[in-house]
Amino acid sequence: MLYHYPDNATVFELSNEDIIISLDQVPTWIKTSLTGKYLLQIMNTPRSLEELTESLSLHYDLPPEAVRPIIAKTVSRFVQEGIVQVEDGTPIIPRERQSIEDFHLQQVWFNITDACNLHCPHCFARQQKAQGFAPLHESLTFLKEAAQMEVDEIVFSGGEPTLHPQLMEILEGARGLRNWKVKLLTNGFMAGEEGGEARLMEICKLVDDVQVSIDGNNKSTHDLARGVVGSFERACKTVRIVASTGTQVGISFTPLPRNLKEIPKLYKLAIDLRANYIHLNRPKPPAAPNLFKETEQFTSEEFLGQVYSAYDELLIACHKSYEDMRGLPVKLPSVDSSFDPASELISPFKKLRCGAGILTMAVNYKGDAFPCAALTQERAYIGNVFSQGLPDISAKGRHMMLSLFSVDENEQCSKCSFRYYCGGGCRATAQDISACDCMCQIIQDRYIDFWEGLSLPIIRTGLGQESHGGKEVPQQRC
Image 1: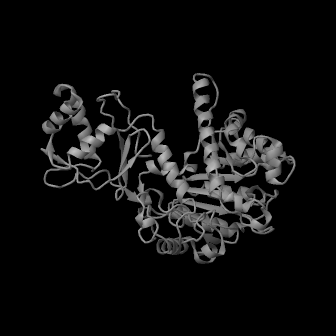
Image 2: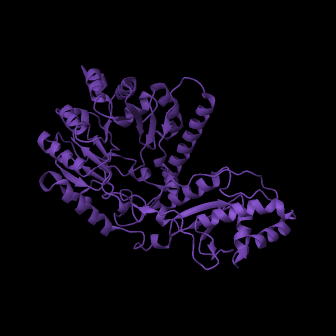
Image 3: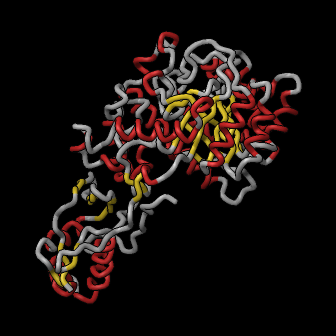
């Protein structure tokens, strides 16, 4: 059998002379060494395994029997990924990549109130002071429709959802409709109020996950960011109470110019509070930029680069803690990798766009629907689920987002080798909803940094100066 490399891949050369071979149309990629690169070069002309073995044996001055099993394994992997074809030109089709358009609505955010007891100038949700609450009957009808559509996750947010006077009835209704994930986002302020601890424990019986916003690892930083003295202590108390019930609890952190240095310290805070995970919110323009003096800096490329450097330090702290506390009876939290654009490189999906309006939808207390929780401006309004019903609004939102943007139709994205990995980025952080993400260069840099940081190439042949027994990095995220 003859093997042929048709040279239809994009090759990225890394600083340590390893290379990335990317099939942009699939998309899929593998990392290999100079040996892998040399092997592909000589397969520009169809070659048999024996011919390849002979060529590399001479190249490295090694006996054929030492080279043969390594070459066979390497070529097999190239064929498996669709990079190398058989003699007749018919490729071995790699794993099918589904696109997000193949899936129905997965997650719904229900912002059941616009009222809030804190004053965060960086908030991307609240645009003006309000005290509106989602009506119970309409809420339960909407949730029933979501359950009938087999939505997998319902996220209750706001404003501050614990201020809703009928929160328990809404949660009870959601819990009884479907075996789906029920999640509550809160600022944790309720825990310090009279009866708040008991109410919080009752809430934990009805939800699977509570995510508490903490924007600093000390009270001075957090309270300044949240606009209310004492909010840090209350938020920490909330995390401890939820953890004590056995309900999953996480810390949600929004990077700001004033709290960047505290990101690496979050891991110790999460351990102390017995949180299950740390979630970082990707920086987004605030809904009321006139209230946030640092808006321009908040969305700058320089600031975003600093954010991801701090995130990398957080990951280092995480891995160090795992090593230091291995075997000890300590609850170690995880760090949500979705914050890092590089996580898209191991996604099983081919992305022509982000999932807003297709996989996700956000609904406010009035029933107004938007593509996602970060994209709730008037320009992205879909319709009203209370008056039109979720099935019709979901179909309308899907059509709107499919028509609005595609990496194949965007002039800048269509020329980019990364387009099917990132899907053009986030619609909420794009300066124009139909343009590519303003973080485009940051995303590309994170991809390269991820590839550079892999400890071993995915295919390492073990020839010449290279070591044997290279490990593989999973390319699929289950």
